[in-house]
Amino acid sequence: MELPYVDVMSMLRELSKPLWEIDFPSLPNVWGISAPWLLSHGYRLYPTWPEGRYESTICNSDHPAPRDLPHPYAYSAYFPGPCNDVSMSQNVIGAQDEQWRDVVIKVVAKGSQELTIFKILAETPELFDSRTFPCVIPVLEILDTPYDYKFVVLPR
Image (cartoon, rainbow, N blue to C red; front, side, top):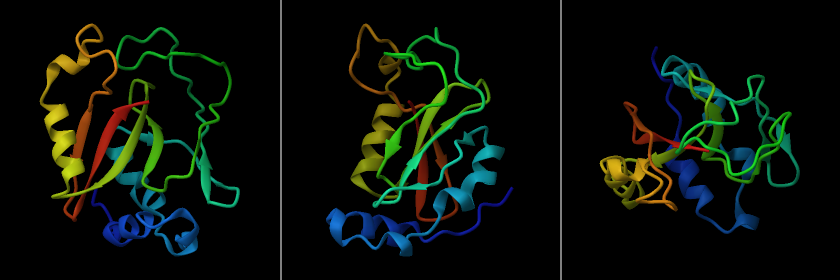
């Protein structure tokens, strides 16, 4: 499946402004456009809808993840029912993988320091052992796109 083009770089530049200066209506719907492509790569995005002044999103999963998953998918708390994560970020979204484990997906610019750090973390298998790195969230996958950004997948 081909990923439609989204002007993510303009979105990331806009999101780097102070919150009160961001023109939220002008931001592209990167998640709506990318959802079929991400699904073809094994990630089902949570349904989202605008909520509140800053266009935050609330996620809701029809398939709650099992409670007793091992690190890095383990929960620190579990509340049955729909998740109620509220995020003001337009470049991060909740999703589930093919095993119904909760993850988050972040849009990151190619060539950025942030992506370099994510790549280093992805190449460090010790991060998947909670005894050696108990406070570092490991990178599960970095999905390349034909454009100037990548999707970074992390446990939720």
